Length: 184
Image 1: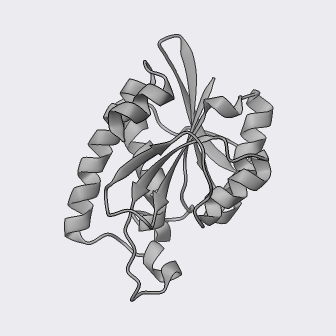
Image 2: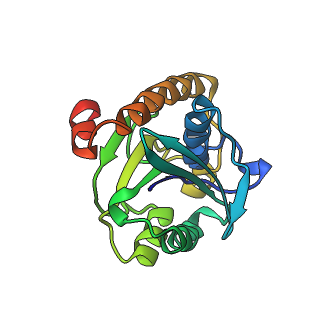
């Protein structure tokens, strides 16, 4: 079983904010697969789909971003998911808007959601897809990540959704290493 997690904050007020790019991307992937987040467990919304004889579980933790690791750990334990089969989709302040970077492991890079995941899983050896949201040093970081994209940025993110759809389709057929070679 594969676990695909989109990071974000629950609640309408956070919808379409920079920090919720993980929710936005996983919504696009599940929409392309014609499935909806119709189940809830352990403070998370999830759905499942069998693709190429493999079960994929898509998760949107419903605790705030900084507590995502607690939710993910409960899913990993309950569904007996290997760390090797987890992919986290999240925002990255240090990359330009819409840039996509795949990583097989690594540090949190200061991202509090990733810090909590590492703390709860006891490792940083999980796969991640980082989506660039840029950084405006003239705005407090908290206000910036909880802000919405400009029209121009939103157009870039819409294109990013399509690219991520292609990445996910390839992920169902290729190893993550081959995926990184293709998209990084």
